[in-house]
Length: 476
Image (cartoon, rainbow, N blue to C red; front, side):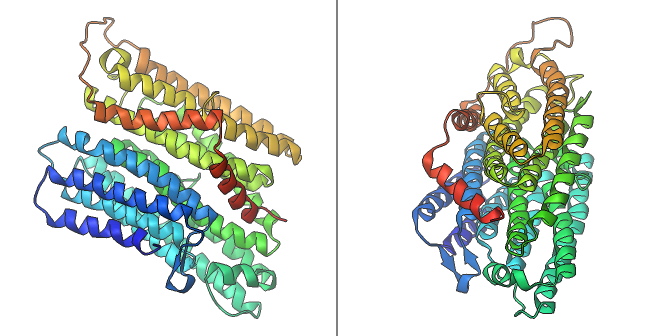
């Protein structure tokens, strides 16, 4: 089963690349993603999923990320055929192949129990997603791809260096050199502290670059701004979750070594800085897709803060990871619909969307309230959990700053979103509505319903998975 989660999507990707049918490829992506979703569902109910002598293992944290990402992949795969029908002159071979290959990479990363294999998976995700950003073949999208690749490559190189430092910390402490996660956890108490500290910091910067934590976030505005809505949803809800998973794998080693307090301090600092940067750049932001990029920077900061606080905030951070992925999927898919209808991403041209594309505009507005933590949506519950844990653990200043920055982002995003949805560029309401195919609206609506349900009630199987994953990441 562990290998099937990786190889089956890659087999579909090979078939998609080989066939010549332009119209058939998107439907093969949907079929392949559905098969992958069935395999994931089976794997989630199996007591143990492992392969290659423990190099692949699906633990509670991996199940959480894999399940969340699969839901997002399934929504984007359903959206894809109708989206590509709007661009009949563009070849979709590379786009469909890379999207299906990325599904296999997610299966690899969420099961990787060896830091070297985890690094390979993250690098593969970079290569799989880059062609998706360049789908429109414009000079700005080419620039965005190069920024994504160059800055991401620096981050991934630092992550590789940090993995070497972690291995040397084991060796210098007298342990057997191994990058298997169980071996690292077992030998963590004996690791050389200076080398361990250096490894933790370098790995945080490396994998934090892939997450998009400030100040390593500079690739995000361009990549998210130029990527199609499908690619933006995968970048914001899947790639960042996989990078966050890598950070959590390293954090587990720090907890096992008794260095949780050391590891939490930079997480708190980078988390607050990310929220501050997002708060500054959302103000008067005219490009609504770049606005969503800065929102992603904010929410990566929230995840880092939750882990940095510890205790119940870890549970809140993991729940927020799920909520953010689903809400971002809603926002990027609907933003793609607005871009198609208006031919622009700027609020100078995109106004009064509720009259032109009423369904997508309503979803965009609801998604805005969801992602900014408004009740009764899921992010409100997860952010409230993080704030409550911060107060319980004596981080009063962090909690106050956290709330102030949330308010700043709400105001900044709200001004742009309300202009997009309710504004009127020419002073009239005579623009006829654009026909919105159900296939372009239903996936985003389903994701938003899930975000709403998670705000009203967290199902017990998901809550149990969250508690199990949080227990591994929190200091005893």
